[in-house]
Image 1 (cartoon, one colour):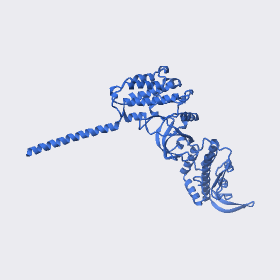
Image 2 (cartoon, helix red, strand yellow; image 1 turned 180 degrees about the horizontal axis):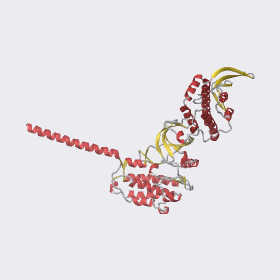
Image 3 (cartoon, one colour; image 1 turned 90 degrees about the vertical axis):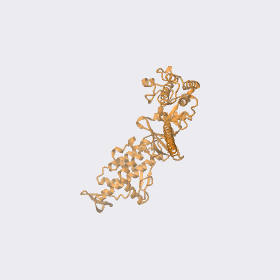
Image 4 (spheres, helix red, strand yellow; image 1 turned 60 degrees about the vertical axis):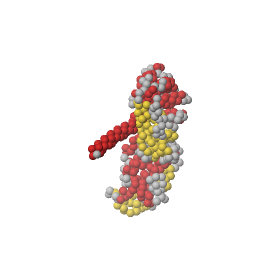
Amino acid sequence: MGNGNGPENSIGIRQESIAYYSDLNNVRRKWIEQYSRISMDGNYQKNKSCIIEIFNMLDIALEIRYRQFVDASTYLGIKTENGKEYVCYEYQGREVYFFDPGDRFKPKLVALRRFGVDIPHDIDDLNKNIRNVTVHGNETIVSDIANLNYENTKELMLKMSDLLVRLGFLEAEYQTPTFDQMRTRIGKELKDSNYRVNYLLSEGGTSYVYLGTQISLSRRVAIKELKPDKFDKKLIDRECNNLKKIRHPNVPRIIDVFYENGTYYIIMEYIEGDTLDKYCQRYKLSYSEKIRLANSICDILAYLHGNERGIIYSDLKAQNIMVDKNGTVFFLDFGISRRWDEQSIIGYSKNYAAPEVLQTGRSDYRSDIYSLGKVMEFIFYGTETEGEFDDGIKSIIDKCTMNNPDDRYDSAKKVKAGLQELKNAKPSYLEGNIQGKVEKNNSDENNSVIIVMGISVVILLAVVVLLLIYLFNIT
């Protein structure tokens, strides 16, 4: 097929297309694939390509049905009427005649109507915009349409899908595919093969996040697929605009944004590591390492609050913080972040949200300070610590999480200053812990090895003693 799986110049390829689309699963797959590719941004070439693919498939579907009717009929010969010649068949006890359609689109419509297929006449208008010159192969031409925007393209596509339904090639429930039917699958390529989806990393309330590959650069990227029932266009614009303003080494940069599969995709720099909750489960962290993590989170939050007009992160929680193999902290998922002068709150995470967010739906930078306190509470009290730690951290957490916003720290910098005072105290149990973290599994394995080695030594000594006693008795 010249533009995918439609008929080609070669008769052999056209026969392959007929065999391919005789399988209705292939028709459904092609329809969903092309419907999901309609450009929301009105990309003319992309929308034109979608129309061509479906028109070619429809042309083949018409031919398949036409041949089936002909095979079920008796050929009566050529009938001449008013100087014109028609092919004539007997079908279900009645005479049916029409111009031999050959490979032409509109004559096949006429022939199928004569056989009794209910085909609305407005489908003939397709020929005004789309011509399929299949007599000489399959050169598909989309005439100059004033505006192939999203709505116009979808209207043409649905008109063609309606005929596919009438011909019995497509189930009606697939005419307007759902997000679950269209959403990307592992191994699928996006945006004209610019990106490949490798595997699912996580699922949140508003999106799926995949590990992907930017094919042209052979580099790994994070692919965020938004759930269409959980967002609107303003949310996308807000997240992208906020991220574009941020130039910070601990915030992944945005690479691309596009509409496909009935939703939006945000392509971002990929950060390899564990979310903070998993990181704390994987490692037994020392007090000093926990202080370092908390300081890093304070640094990023202070930057956001002070960046140009200021960004309220709005969803600070352990699951939105990434820690890479070097222990570097990153903020992820700016989906509900906003500028300080924007009042609308799109969502929140209940266990980390400040009381004023839960009660009034209003927030400011002090609401982020509350969430920061809840994150520190998780770090210091929700996970195991290697050795002792200064319980003075509790007073800092308590001040962050006061019910009255006015009673909290008024900046992340002041929270960090409080942490620094604790660190400067240098309790004796902070000395000498250079690594700061011990992998729990490795620690258990090391303990097991030591125990086994100890038992082996005891057994060896026992054997030596018995051997010496034996030799002594002989002598």
